[in-house]
Length: 140
Image 1 (tube, rainbow, N blue to C red):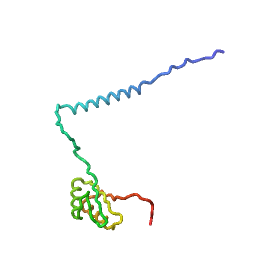
Image 2: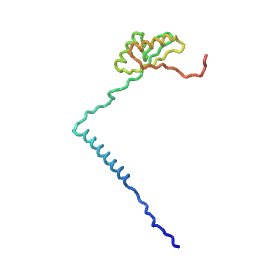
Image 3: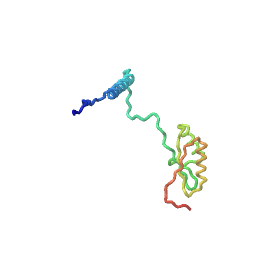
Image 4: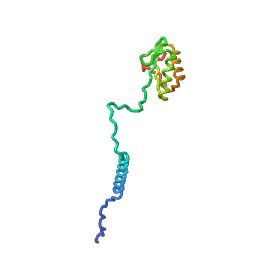
């Protein structure tokens, strides 16, 4: 009894998805080159500078140091409470989201830290951090 064999199907490769991807890439690059042309539409001779600075720098955080006896230092400059408030208000006027780090002596009275927090609040600064140091676990 002869076996009836069906002819084997030839494997086929569907090229439709690959053609779709290639056409998408062609369209992408055509659109991208069109954007580049509009930027260089006019022949402009740009000025040269020796040192280019960014136009808008984010300011560094201000560090207020408080000694054990309650003296305030902004950077290396010693200030009274009123002078510190004026400096912080000027910084907040220049940049509304100015940040301040308060570093107080750990063995000093907590009142000095609260005074600095109040000065920051009156100057309009809300981005305040309290500096600390990670030490060994010793809970009194």
